[in-house]
Length: 337
Image (tube, helix red, strand yellow):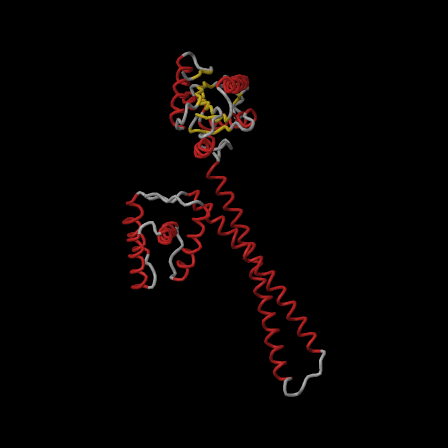
């Protein structure tokens, strides 16, 4: 069974799960988050019964019991809560928390100001001796409330700073999850996501597969550090040459993919040929030794999506064309049949 909730739904489950974990002093680690997310999503009714029983018995859920239940119900079922769903859910949760705090603080500030104004106004009146002690007590209590609110406000300001820091970290985490750190290009996960977005369109959708020629031999001769520099340069080249809506992606190793929405194979061929020519003209040298390095080239295969064809099927056909380009001498572009 798979979890299929969107991020908003996932956030609602986390809003329920977090207080439960805090209440019962359950360690906030990924395994426990998944366990209690499962509990509130009611993905495994039997798991809910077991957790209820454990809480009734221990008042918490010991770590060894959590691990056992996770392995028994969640892991064995093949269920998975994707990192993206959890990340988006937590991001929504943090955003909602920040907004709620802002709204609450604004209301309490207005209340405190109004209360102080009322007390100041009340002090101007001559009061009956019988009621004066009561008013004085009310004034003391109101002043105490205002002082507490001021202290609370300071803590809230500090908490808001932490929340903003957490949001920044979550944004960075989201970027890291979708970006290849070496080249700065999107990764394979993003390729799949964007392909699904365009898959049902009647417009052309073309995939270009690109593979650096003899890259293993290059690494053996010049070292992996130099190889990484080549990959970085290619990443920058693809970013420069692939204008929207074209999306370049590091597919893995020395292989890249370029997704071309609303672009036919002829136009995609022009894009690939342009990249091929510019890459072959780049002069490389070893900065450490000053040694000139032979031009780096790449081979390309292009396939147009057919009907409701899945991404991997299109990639397989583009790869066959790419292998044909390599077999015919490399440093060329081939179209899939």
